[in-house]
Every structure is written in structure tokens, then in C-alpha cells.
Image (cartoon, rainbow, N blue to C red; front, side, top):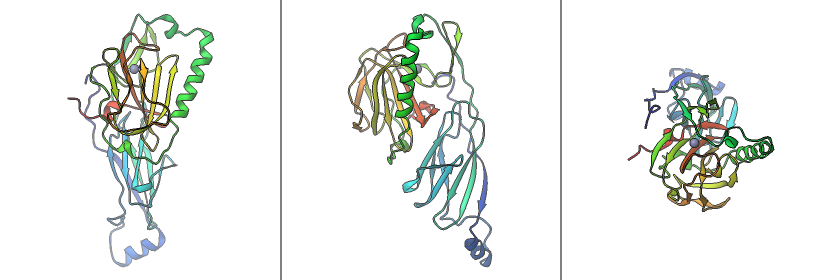
Length: 287
Ligand SMILES: [Zn+2]
């Protein structure tokens, strides 16, 4: 890994515990300190950093809100993520089945991202002609829709295996300068490999998009549950279809250079709904 492999600090949190009326009375009567009982606990793991996915565990039957929006927590497992430029603390509120509730503030650790210059891209991809603007806008809509699934699956809680082996040529959060023009940051990890290299599913999932898009070429979005998805761009071929259920290691397609690409590579991405996460933070250490 280059550049962005900084160690992440511990969770920076502020904890507030609010007691329901009955629980408050019982705890006071027994002289216990004003904190949640041991069984009423919220534990967080994962990466509370810019681009990181945070996992939460709560007792079964709890309800959870992140930034005042309800999140799926059936089975006591939930998650949320931070964009590359998020800086604000996020409130995580838990309503425990016994009536207690708790709010914990989670602050993303800041990271530093490098500038990456790419020259020699065909001009129609850097400044697409007006007639393809409509297609690009339509492509963006189908990708947004593919990332909206909130399925009751928990593959997201497993460590991701790398889909191919190769040389990392671009990292998440790189500020990009294409043919000399500053652009939006890069949201994927680019892994260079020869054309036709088999791409394996990093963990279980359901295929939500498998389509040829103007900028990203043959593009796949895989749903890993609770709003977490991974994406695969520029493939030469796609070998699974929308709706297919995948197991870790299943071959989903082949490395290519379709769309806006200077050579064969896999651009691998991760999202929590529309939040763009750094897939390298969720992936296993590379061999
Ligand atoms: Zn990329």
C-alpha cells in the first residue's frame, strides 16, 4: 500500500446515557451508578475514519439511528460509513429493548490524500461531448439505484478478500488531475492486472447492476447487506447477472480497459448507500 495506509486511532466518542423512567428508579433504589446495565451495551468496531465502515453490535431487539436516520439492526448488527471528506461527529442512538437509550458520538479520524496526475486520456472521456452528457447522467442514476438496496444480509461484516492480485496504481481519495484539469477525487482502488484476469467476489453478495456504462465501462455493483455494496469497473467481460447470489471466490468477470481507462485494471469501490468508502480499509491485509 502506498500513501494512505496510515494507522487509525481509536474511536473518538462522547457517550451520553439516558434512562427510561422505570429503569432510572430501579437503578437508584439499588444504588447503582447511572449507566446502562452491562447487558445494554453498544460496541463499535471497524474503521471510524474518513472513508471507513463502522460496525455496531447491540442486543437483539434494539433500534438504532445514525444521524437521526433509522438503520437496519435486526440480529443486533448494524453499520454506517464516512465519506472521504466527512469531518463532523455522527450521533449513533440506540433504543434498547429494556427501555434504556444511549447516544454515542463517533468522530471520523482525518486522513491525508495524495494528488494524482493522469495524462494522455482520450479527450472524449475527460470532457465528454454534449451528446453523451445525457447518457452519463442516466448511467449515474442507475448506479445510485443499485446502491440503495437495504437487504437483510450480513456479508458486510466479514473481511473482504482482494478480488484480484496486482499492482495498486491508484488509491481512494486521490485528488485527480486529468490531462491537466482538476477533477473529483478518485473513489476506488485501482489494481493493474493483465486483460482477462479472473475477478473473484470478495465475500458473499447479490448482483444489483451488471451493465456497460459510458465512463466506467462494464460495471458491476454487488450488495453485501445493510446498504454496503462493492463495485467493479472497466471489466472486459461480466460473467454473472443481476439477481445472482454469490459466494466468496465466485468469478464475476474479467479485468479489462472498457470506458475511461488508460490500460487494463480493476477499479474496486465500496459504498454505504451513497457514501463512498475506501474498500482498502475493509479488505484483508495483502499477501
Ligand atoms: Zn479507479
